Image (tube, rainbow, N blue to C red; front, side, top):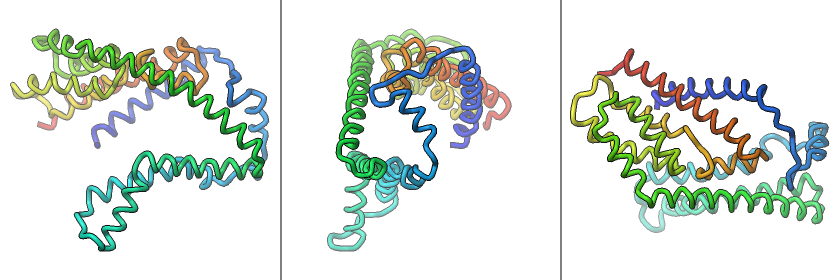
Length: 282
């Protein structure tokens, strides 16, 4: 966790610097979307703060699901088995119910509806219109995200990960850059950061265990994590979420979001490599 935190600070900083730079280079106009017209955004920006809901209420739709899911995870990890009929048994049952990710998200949605009702002064017409626009916008994102995930799944079924493993098994390059490259190639080829990290870890587990490394195996893990950043494109569901929710074109998303993640990944690799040289921890 400490290693990830240190590398993450440098990666996030480089991402922010790139975002500031690309913002000056790209001229992306504020566009109308089905659920947020430019005129509406301008009107909202001029709303007096006294007419806005309090911060704690506005945060509840996000914080409550996170809190419930976290509580469920903590109780499963630290609370032992309880006998039927005991207080702990019933408490765990309640926490397990509200901590289920689906139930927790439904609770968050209900709180969001209460917040919306409060802001719309209980007007059924305004509430209905807002919910319909949100569902229409969200539906498009879900469809495109599902299509991107399906494309990535199809590429996984072709066995591309195994082919990459076969091609790189005898490659005698330094393991830290190799870990980054393998993960990045798999990530770009099939779109899943999780699958790319698992694939790279499987490939390198034997290579790193056959001989003594000059540095702690932590650095290989960090390099694999950094390699999962570049390069999200059309086969990545996250790419389409950013594109649709930001109202970007695919080209604009590639130049901004995708390129920023690539910069963050490369920066993380450099910091990881320097750390392995300066603080090998062996």
